[in-house]
Image (tube, rainbow over the protein chains, first blue to last red):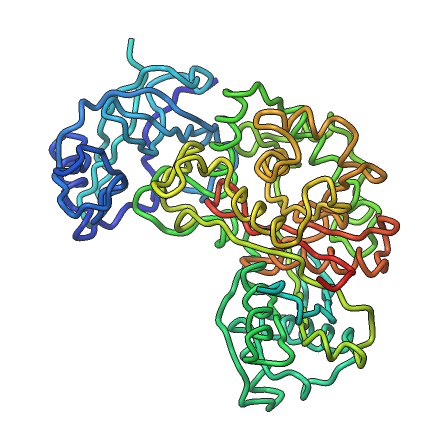
Length: 141
Length: 388
């Protein structure tokens, strides 16, 4: 077993674009944000120009509760690049507002992961040219 | 309307030598060797080609001075074969070469292969690559249906044993393998052990298609496209690989079942169903993907794929033998695109009856596939000996 922590090596960091900048700015401010449709109310992620449910262009950025549950997971032992410390645990989280986000689980032993467990977002300053703050998730309770 | 591919035949196929490293070759040289091999296999000359598919085939077009010719840049596997066939069916070309290869682009293995880890701002920082993408799909299936690592390991052992006895496979003679061997290999991305995963290698492959009324002059019996289709949900490896990802047009078809629509349409055009398939040349990036494909294509019910692959159907001599040359796990995984054509190449070789190993006797119908749920796409091609 090993304690899962945010990666601190020279990992590939996101380069925000005009559509996604509000998402990354939210992370810098310690808030996980997603897009919601002003016409039908459906959530959309990853950041997009069109609503995933009705293709409306009327999307607004709203704050997420930051809470959700693990939808699926894997535990990686062969790192994608040598910069990643193993094991690390990619997860898909279904957020309370009904959208899915891909992240890594941190703050627990690697064998504590399971589908259905409640998680909440935690932020880790990864720096880089765009002053990136990455959302990770930890178990609740 | 008549059958869309009635006037098209596959008349040439060729794999170059496949190896972990092909000394003295680069991507262009191995692809050109594949192109010449497929043309020779068809009993044709370069000057008989008046259409090419793929950026590398375009280089062949120049080097052999056979232009002007029809060209498509379609790069990836079965969609390229379908596009070549459509060009002939539409009268845009008479004889189409599809060729690709890769050598020398991945020889430092500290990181996973470049084609496994496209850059994207929502996945790259989390250490994602193909094994992790497909593992997220497999784990969800295990959660929903109780699918076991043992059933996945059985798939991997079966495919690797096909390669073990194939003298043209990169891992020829490396077996035989049992499911226990797979389960004891080191973990890569849970639930996938090393032997549940595709390898990396180098190689070239090519196909030649021509008009069905020109097959009197070709060297071997023609093989026909009975039906085909492609299902895509968007770019691979850029968004969370969610099993339940759905579409607004067909909410009943989720990403976990990607390939179902393509298979249904291919079977409908062919007038066939899963029970008619003699050879399942299914794409095998990871062991679980075969379980998923049997469900998606209707060979068994949803959630029953694990039991299905354990029921004796997928082995040599079974009703639906899988990936008979050893696939990407043992035959070859030559880069970003090469292996995506090699299920079709093997299907043609099976229907011709010329396989050096695992030849299925008297096979009439081969189902060839590419992609997988972790990549958000699956392509399907049905091949047969009889002109549709």
